[in-house]
Length: 161
Image 1 (cartoon, rainbow, N blue to C red):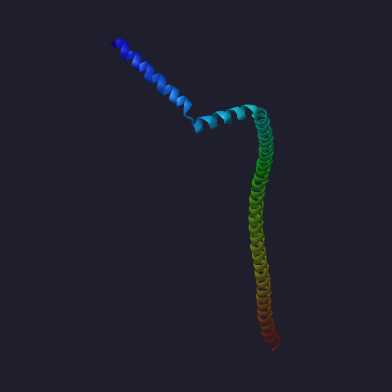
Image 2: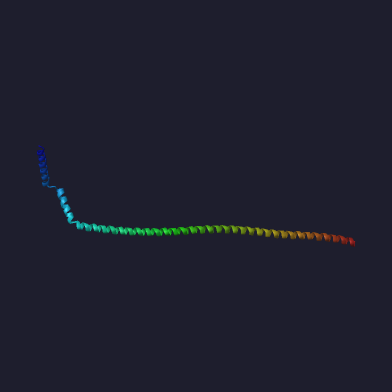
């Protein structure tokens, strides 16, 4: 019995397999034909893939060259920026030195002006003192001469008279 059911299962499976093989399946059939065509068209696809690969490598080489040029330009700009920064720092230091020198010159000028004013005041004071002392001296001399001349005239009157 077991043989019989096994035999029936085998016959039914064979019959179903035969039916599935006989029934046309367009998707499988079309897929098989496309695969066969692909096999015959493989050299063309390989050529196309090679061409795409060559174009991609050329584009990559061009991009790499542009990247190298950009890196070189960036390095040049960085160097130029560093030089300009150093020059700027030097100019700032020079400006600070010139500012300090200008402040010192202003102080020297103010000191000179104040010394000049003091000198003029002293000279004017000495001149005024000289004029006043001359007047005082003349006045003193005049008083002495007057007192001497009045004594002389009193004494000469007394002697002569």
